[in-house]
Length: 113
Image (tube, rainbow, N blue to C red; front, side, top):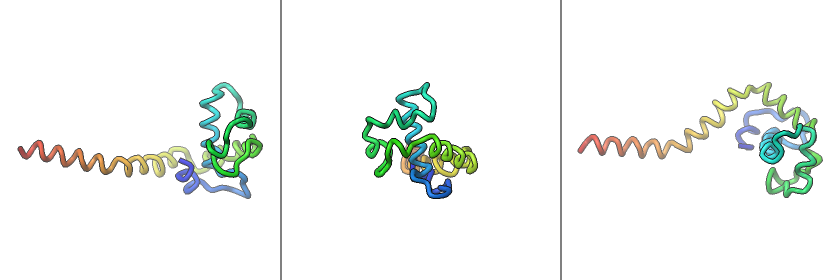
């Protein structure tokens, strides 16, 4: 997921944390504290193994409201629907392609009998 986002969404300025890693951190934060506001994200990660969960070299302090909100702005500028269609949907279809080919072959074998 991080690679898909970072390959499409521009990281403006000298970001300490990429947009993809910010999204990953927000998703993990949402799984832990669903009713907490964005600026409390560093508090959630301060006692967690952040390098394993989000990425190497990222600290809880670097996941502040400025980096997360600018990541959300970058996602909005790119377009979430476009990101889904060009990124995740294509990746899913690429992953499913061998299974779809196999199903197609199995259907042909059944009809030929």
